[in-house]
Image (cartoon, rainbow, N blue to C red; front, side):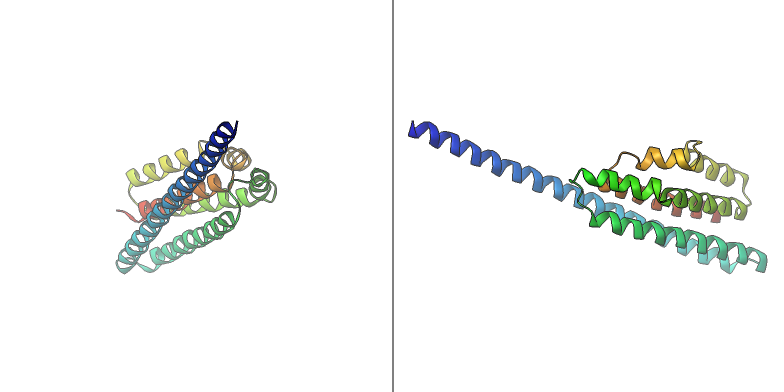
Length: 189
């Protein structure tokens, strides 16, 4: 009987240790994915700002004003998304109650609508800057894939209605990347 109890205890401790190893591995993978996304956002932002400066040098006064508007809109949207990212990072990803908290933040407090409207404004500004019809079509295509034709409320519900802080965080990283890519597309000739 003592041997059976010893085997059971050994098995339970082994399972607990295995569970901790799996959890630590998952946490490490999530942290690595977040770090990769941060680096991609940083790279896209640097590319946008570099291209913006190059285009500003060659622009007339009217064009420079449009470029400033685009820059302000893109950077304000990026900063807003960054602040949301920081808030999501403070939440426990494994706490199921945080799914409801994310839903409240994005759906019921109007944050999702603000994201939607800010992105739409950046898209409109990018399209107004580029003179190239292919780029305008490309920006429209990016917009279509981003919003799938959904209005603000439906788009917000689809993206943030049933997600935890990790999912919201990954969506926000993706939105930041697309934001800078849309801005860059507007700067291309």
